[in-house]
Image 1 (cartoon, rainbow, N blue to C red):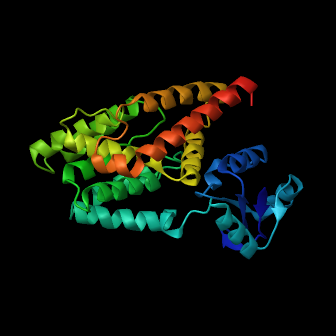
Image 2: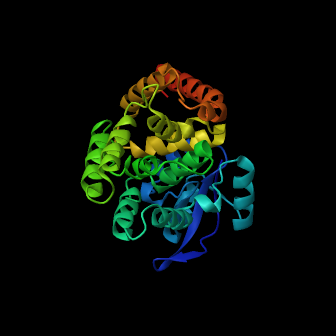
Image 3: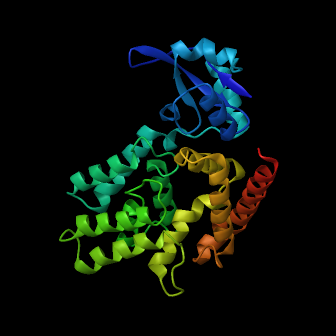
Length: 296
């Protein structure tokens, strides 16, 4: 079910409503797209829509509710994203982390944050970066090696939706920006780690690579609701790709991930995420193939 609250929230010379789904983000994205709502209006679990679109969206099937009822119902559905994961909070948390990682290098941190918050990003956004950094903390009891943390900052710093090429360009950016900024060995290690995120297949003896790859794939082991948000974000990142082509490409990605043995390379990563990740991946692959066979 699609819900909308009254236009009340002021910004940009007008007032805005919140548009949500109580069923799935896929339903929400499809409804918004059909109604002509721009993808830039999406904010993790809702769309911000201007007052001029309110009547149109109600006529299209959105159910009018109070702001309090919308929040309560969204929370009950499991699709609400907590405040600490929203854009402003994410930016503050990331700025603090960067300042403690490389003190006195605020300009580079600002450049990276600007890249991670580009408007065309949905899943591959600053929220993903923070999630990777938090996952590294989980894997290392809060003490990840600095080259691994730097690699996390750079691993999707260049993102244009072109697999492997994005990783190559991100690695090149890391090589360029870190030269003469950190020790030579570290400046070489960071691009090497960034390139590993194209395959997530570090060697058995590559402990740094294992940490980064596991943290990058931790999203696969989230709850079904969190995984659904991830899937919706990935689809939004590739909104320019026709449905049939996306389904074929996504099925190939899912098969590749399911074929990784192991999927997670650290003992803690396996304990935290492996079983749920396999369940999530298998469920999504089944749904992708079923929808492709029915033309849905």
